[in-house]
Structures are given as structure tokens and as C-alpha cells.
Length: 340
Image (cartoon, rainbow, N blue to C red; front, top):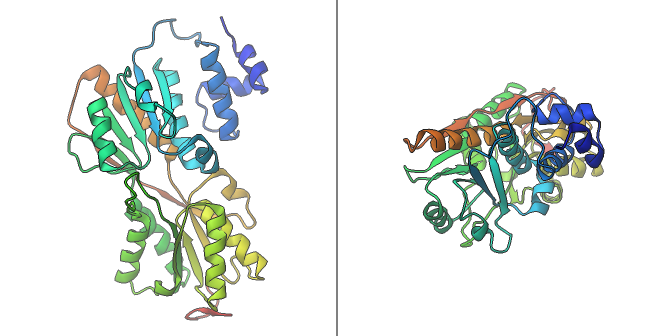
């Protein structure tokens, strides 16, 4: 029988770290990659915690991920969602079949699962396909209009409003928004709910945003390019709200390279609260999105459905939280915009 010491040796971490990871200690400061390596090693070794009996898995949960494995490494948001699911399943003796939509014949691997979690963005055709494949289904990070399908999403309206309330309390009236475009398989542009919430709030509160609205992708490179475009335009807002932390990091790099100070010249706010956000210079003010807990809640909902039988679908919105660090500051003077 595999032991914690066996897992620690293969994963190249301490036995104490293995123990804390397997017991879902969220206070342990390790990278998502290390946490995942320990969990994968435990699964491969068929490790069984001593405080529970060695029994057959209660049921099998299938995961289909919108991102590829490479994209998942570049954006820890979806990685954290999946880790939340897998940690819950490991603790409750639930077998997992993990797939990515980019995998060849991924649907074939999901035919025998008892329930299914879909992470990310999918077309209406894909939603219908997954529902026909397995009626015990739940979507994470994507609202679905079908009243029979359960979903868990972030409350973007609440999150964006809280972020903008903070920026306006600092005296900012000219605020930019850097966002990304995402497409589902039928080449249909997926709605960007953060951008929509941002525009609605700015319209209602007379915030000047139109000259500073940019859309690219949710990557660092795109954040850099969008900020360079704003700089080249000759006018900058006094604050920028980025739809993801990677976008914010790219924007901060562009500002620094062009001789601008964050937050002295431009305040920058991100979204998601990835781990590196607290180690940037300056540390990034951002919106914490509880991605890990979204995954855990999703697995718990499906466990309830499997054990208790079909019930009314749930439409859950998780609140997000503003994390104030040092990348935003109060305006020392009144100004419409920063002229270059």
C-alpha cells in the first residue's frame, strides 16, 4: 500500500507538504503545479487515506475542460477550478475521468461516467450534446439558459461595481477597460460579462470610458499591446480596470517601459487574484474570484444529485472580493485625463 512517504519521494516534496495537500490545507503556500503533481501522484499510486476504509469509488465524475492543457498552465483561473473539483473528489472517494475538449475522442472517454462537469465556454450545440451524453450535468463559469441544467458562475456585476466604486472613491473619473474576446466552436463571439457590467456602471455614473475601451485576449502579451495602443493615442485615463490579472500585468509592463509610474501616473486594477499578483511591483490591486471554491462546490452539487436523485437545477452566483494592494492610489489633483 502506498504511503505519504512514497508520494513525497516521487513528487519531490516534503512529507509534511504532501500531508497538507492531501488534507486540502488551503493555507499551504505551494504553486498550483506542485499541488497538482502531488494529487496526480497519489492517484497513480492508488493512495488511500488511513482514516477512511478501502472501498470502491462511490461513483465516477467526468470533467471536460474548455481550455487545452497548455492554455490551462498559462491561465491559473481554470486550473484552480479543476483543482477544486479534484480535491473534493479525492476527499470523498469519487473517481475522476479528466478530459480536455482539445483531446482526440474526448467524448468517448466520458460515456461511462455517472455525472459531468463542464468547465469554461461552450456553444449551444455542445451544451445540447453534453446534456444528451449525461443528464447529471453542471456547467462552471458559464451561464446556461436551460432551466434543467445547473450552473455556478461568478457575480460579475457585483465584482465590477465594487472595483469601480473603489476607483471612483479615489477620485478617478476617466477609467479605461482592457478586456479579451473569446469564441465558442461555432465561431460565435462569447459575451464578455465583465465588459458589459463595466459599461453599464460607467454609463449610470457618468464615468468617461469610451476612448479607453480596448479588447484583445486574456493574456499578458495582449495586455501589453492594448496599453501600448492607449499610450500611442496620446492620452491616458487616470485608472485602468483589466478583465484579468495577466492583462493587468502586461499593461503595467507597457507603462513602465514608456516611463509611466504605477500608481503615480496610472492606477491599475486586475481581476481573478492569481498568486503572482501579490508579488508584482507594485503589488496588484485586484478582484478575488473564488475559482478553487467554485470547483469544490460544483463537485459537491453533483455528489448530492447522484446520492439523492435528480432535483431542481441550481443557478448559483458566487460573490467576488476586492483585494486592495498598492497599484491604485488617490488622485492628488483633478484632471480629465493624463496628457502625454
